[in-house]
Length: 274
Image (cartoon, rainbow, N blue to C red):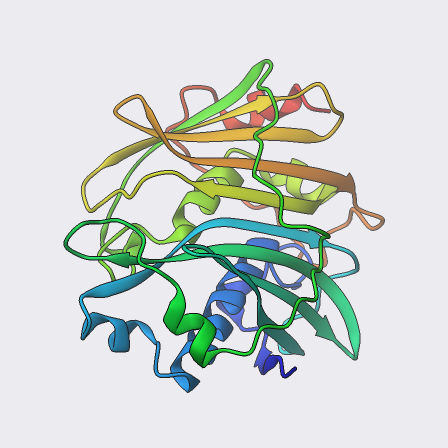
């Protein structure tokens, strides 16, 4: 069965400032774009669903980084496919590669939501229009379980602005991940690389909402829990695991200066992780 494949270039906005490589969290935006393009070929893009008073939402993303990330301007291939459909759930699996070698793989859980009821719609139309390719990149589709939080190491506050919004006027998925990334200082990111990212989106947030992202250690080395809250309620849960970079030297000859409004200074907080 056919998989949808799209080739992209790593652009300036999606690379890190230390090695000129693709930022791990930017990989998710390529995945979402490729899935949107696949949906457009089946007349089920966001604008198609608007006409039926529906919209897409993603509730989970899981991604493993299995090789070096590509450099700025290099071409990357994104393959995405519908791997499982239940009465209400739509799973996609995906693989990212460059120079014919995979560097990331994972899956995501999607729903089609009725605008009026805010409840998931049945998936009959998906089964009719899409090919189902049961190739699972991370094994069976498992329920997301957030690692138990231990000591808090950082906290950051953010008020949603226009740049955070997506086409549904909800806060974009990438904005939540950016908050989690912002709790790490430049020294930590220069010496560590993201190995896996697991995300569960619990609730929508909107323009003007104030979010608090708290980062915690877990009982596993280099595994962290990030909880994004609005008015004391979790809107997004994130688990990250990290490994040491082989080359810890930046190819850029300056230090990145970060100014934050963290309750705990990022540099002080992440010194606890060393």
